[in-house]
Length: 107
Image 1 (cartoon, one colour):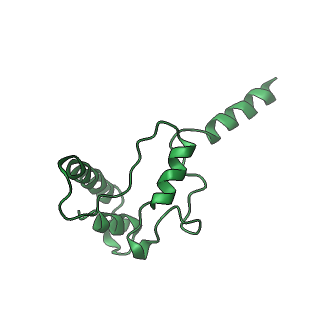
Image 2: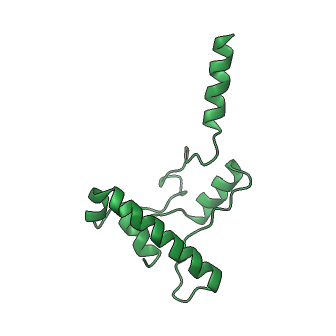
Image 3: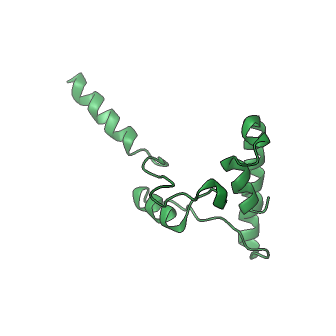
């Protein structure tokens, strides 16, 4: 009986919402670091298929975004600034995925 519960728990964790399992640069789901890191449109579609109800969107990269997209960009920049503090090693490396993504978002 406990073996059945353990397997059910493992399956539930594998399906856990927000899991990035199976996302890779090689499969085209994530952009290579030299191209600005972040997820591609293909990756976003795949993530949303795996996580119904998700509102994940691609990066706001235009110079003059609409009001709502500008708010999203500002929010991302504020959150990623916290990541820069949390991971100082990545913050110091100009080629880290964090720094490249912030550059792409124009932070």
